[in-house]
Image (tube, rainbow, N blue to C red):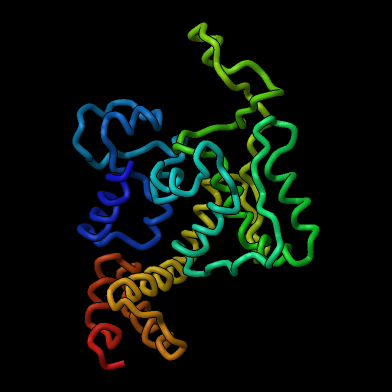
Length: 268
């Protein structure tokens, strides 16, 4: 899992692929075991290599990678809040503010009595929570179709109510869970645009390549300099993004432009 995002980024840099490929790629960097985990056939061997993926696999791009799903899960359960915060911060450079003091966190109901979406709907009735969750929850809901280790799912697991697990039917052994409520990966982002699942959500993000490029440049500049960006740096960031526009904001082009900019040359 950890090898996939590293190899994916190397591929983006080597081929100077457009920044939209971060979220809307038609390939993945896989080994045989990872391909089997994703349900993709025809991949043999332990080496990581580029594999064209079918659209129905929901793979390709960062948001289809198991490493991302694993680090944004809480052990054995998922939470749209943690995943939504990750997307806003790491991918869009639009971090959510910390929760107000005294506001309890939301834990998934593993018994299957209610869905996390229903729990968050109740949570948003608190005016102190509603404004932030209108931004946080939609990307988190889009990623709910992936379980804690990145397997694709259309139903949650339950320890109480639900249908028999498929393993009990096909393998005839006692599973410790049941199939609970259906996963709903639809939603609407803060500006009102709606999506029906992970694929259409990724398309919404890919439709704003300049925004993705600006977020990428901001994170890269912080990483390279070890310093936070100031308000005065926005003009330089906009110039970097504009210069890379003819390459469709190619990832290597963005990195080269950052390296030659006042942000790294110490002339800002």
